[in-house]
Image (cartoon, rainbow, N blue to C red; front, side):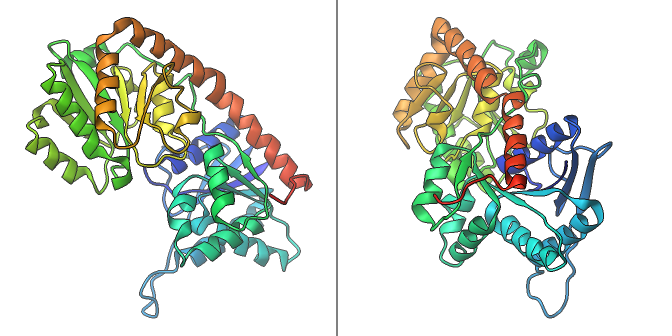
Length: 382
């Protein structure tokens, strides 16, 4: 099957999942065409049956802002016609789904058929999509898609609750390659960062306000005040990185924190972690937490969104009430000091990642869904 994939190329969950899906489909003998504004973050190179088509946006004095959505539509039409795409899979409703629907309508006027699958990932529904200036477009794009998936039951319900959706939304969860995300022997790396045998807390995000990175630093500060021998590794970058650094200085813990920026492969860092901390205000799935679980790192996360579908409280980690810094601190302290409980949760986290969210279990669900979309057997009517 020739599949076109459009996603954001930046450091974030939707782009990562879309890229890994395309790579996995290519390994299963599909021909994959990425159509995006830049080379996706996890797509280090293109070869064999993986192709990349860059969307170029022309600037004209007439436009205050270059019309990316229209440029994307035109590129989708061009690739579909000249490559012969069997299906277009777009990740994130805005603007990818709207561009795809316009491309489909242009192609249909030339008697060409291009089925569309739209995958909803999170803020396209829970935040941006609810803006009155975008909501009608999001609704239209979803309803005009031939198939719609969401990465969690939570996101599926949010879609039904906030949009007049006539399409059935099918849940296909995020996934990882658990052969790649596995705990490795990185003792030399840990020794370099923790010469005195300190335990390691890791947080990975795009440092947006919703990730509550200030709370990560606050928890770390409280643990240090409680004489925990611990270091904190913060991975990623974004608008809240500078305020987070400032808070670390104000609390006097900056010297025990490493701001590592964007990192790939992240599994090497997770392999020296003892606890993964995720106090997010909203998570539709929690891909970073899944990567940690696969590397045998118990997760302490907010009890919000799709996280309860991933983290089993008391088994693979702990779920805490939103903004309850005391709960985050105490659960993290427990994992740092109770070696038996930590070992049990680490093993359970790995087991859950492998048995439920491994790439070889989830990618066939997408293949089956593609076939149903192409044959017209995906039902509408939520």
